[in-house]
Length: 304
Image (cartoon, rainbow, N blue to C red):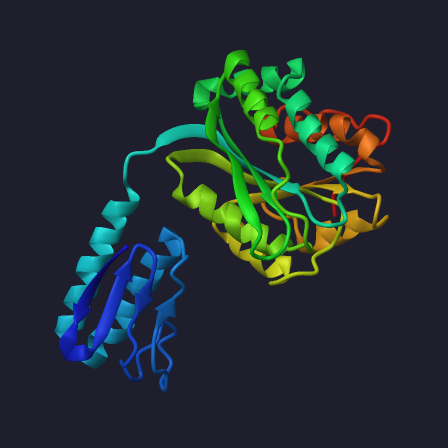
């Protein structure tokens, strides 16, 4: 984070994460009169930051003179340069978010982990990963989540291009299978966390996806549909695996409030005993848009 100041106008402009002009009267991002400030939250992405600076520059140039306009132009250029830093191109950036809330008991948590481990050792999933290698492969990470502020990146970003790297990722998941949380269910919180992981990593994916598995609706923190809409605006798809042991109509809730973006889907399993098959089919769908793995017994794909 870095900031520039225009003391004459008492303006503070930070990029590439934030813009604040706390005492510029009648100068807001909308251009409507009567505003006292213009701001973007510190966690805003580069696209939002650059767009906001352009709007602020346009709205403020006529009202506050050339000094602030010149300063904003300089910040805009620097923010764009910062965003163009060297990144490794991949076909897919994938955050795998595993539910560890209180409704998930120890054996059910272990089955989620085992489902991921077996999925990344599955020949069909490995073939799908190899199919993306010409465009950089898959960058994947694993997150545990529970309440609105309970998220942890358990497996760091790893690039998968072949059988060896897929097996290495599976081994990394199995090696750190300690449960991180066991509180309430904050789906909005994990969507925010996953978006930050994607935005701050060293990869640039042709596709970006957040994969949420869970057995309950949101009961902690920000409503997930609000975060979902912002995440989708950043070009990220949100998919879900609904485990119907606690809430038999959870897939409808996920379809309305959680998933979104290009090709988004909810896949359901009726019990934790089906989760290995569910994880496999979901990953096949996410990794390769050319593979349409048909539902197997106990596994249903649901689209709104």
